[in-house]
Image (cartoon, rainbow, N blue to C red):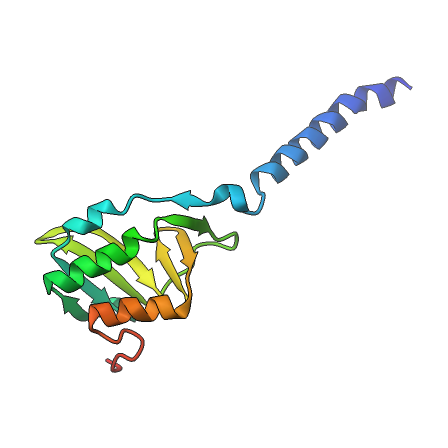
Amino acid sequence: MAVLAASRPRVSLYVIAVLLSLAACRQPGKNDVRHFDFSKFANASRITIVGLGGVTVGVVSDPDRVHAAARYFAGRQDGWTEAWKGPTAGVVALRFSNNATDIGEFQIDKDYLVYGAYHLTVPAEEINVLVKTLGVDVFHLPKQ
């Protein structure tokens, strides 16, 4: 009986450790939705479009197009989530800059946006609006 009583604290500590580990590894849910302030992108003067392999496939420097793209992302500051299986990646990156100063980047795909380790699912029609705003068909780029 003394041996059994001595092992109970060890078992209790083991159970507590397992429960704490499971709590730390929970799948992201509604409470993990993030809001970002994308107002800094309004200061951009240029967007460099980077395709797979880090190849620059286009540059948007028209102020109207750059500011329209910045407004597009400013309208999508809420609802960003972190993927349980790890960060997602887009087909192309949109790197916003002001002269030689990098502001930040988004990655886009046909039905989602990526900002850092976070993604936002959006209807394909909305992505198409962004692509038209850029004036570069980022989903039908010539192979390099």
